[in-house]
Length: 305
Image (tube, rainbow, N blue to C red; front, side):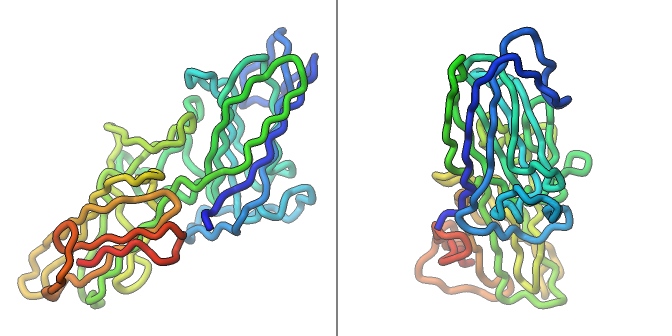
């Protein structure tokens, strides 16, 4: 089943409200309406890849929905119709009201966007853009698991109730299996031109000319590499994968490249042998074959080389 984060969104309109939050624009004399968003109810429990930056939810909260146990950070942004930031809030699991966001806004039409993650994400705050972990201009680690949705709302002078039912996962998972890798072998894997930025106005990843674009995939065990990848869409994004290795006989460095498609909420698996000739009757993209499974971590998309 596709993993989603269920979200209840409630808009209540009252008058003469004041807004006390230093992360939003100051209150003017214009009438404001109260906006309240409640985030809760995972269909399935999120199990992200291990990361040292994950914060544990505070056990002191009693009002929090139990489905938020694995979520540490929520990012709320209110945009004008043309993408200008009107208001924003960042909640952490240490806050007693985690999962409930209150705001006050003037009458009008806006895009409400919410992203949730099991780890804190770097952010261009004033623009509402999530940023992949970087050192200088190079990617140092992948994005954590991210769930996202947005909805167009119109706020007037009458009570309004709007439902935003789900936050959908916008990440994909890549797994690479080097079947004949030995402890003495030198092998590394990179995803070319990984998305470094995710603007919350659209929820779609983009590349930055100023930032490095290649992601080094983490080796989890002998011959097994895996990470979450932002370079994906619901219809599939063409992605180039490079496997760098040193030949055993000559010690020369070589690179095996494969073109794959990455899909949101799907796993793509690349498998094969680097150090032995492969005889395969059916081949796609040279030495690699590709399969895609819609289920997360089940019946994986397999690429043989």
